[in-house]
Length: 83
Image (cartoon, rainbow, N blue to C red; front, side):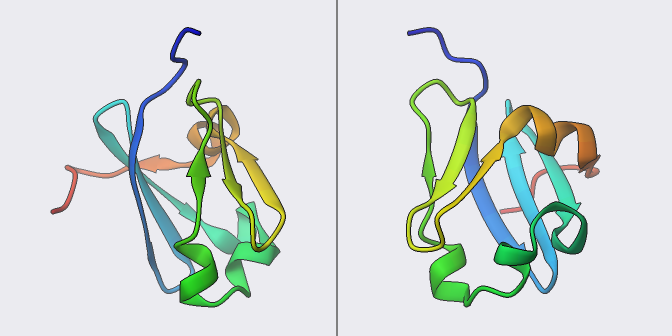
């Protein structure tokens, strides 16, 4: 199976989700992307699985799925990845 994207990290700050995808950090406003994630607890947000192909991200506890391509279209590239 070929890797579409490499999602190496996801973190949340308030109503924003930041992801390192293919070595670059992107941020999205959860109010635009997912009301489920926006209203979820920090514990539920941090329980995610990246598909083996890197095509999508799944939150089992929330039954929420997002495509990486969709997140990239909505996301804003950040200056540099944070530690």
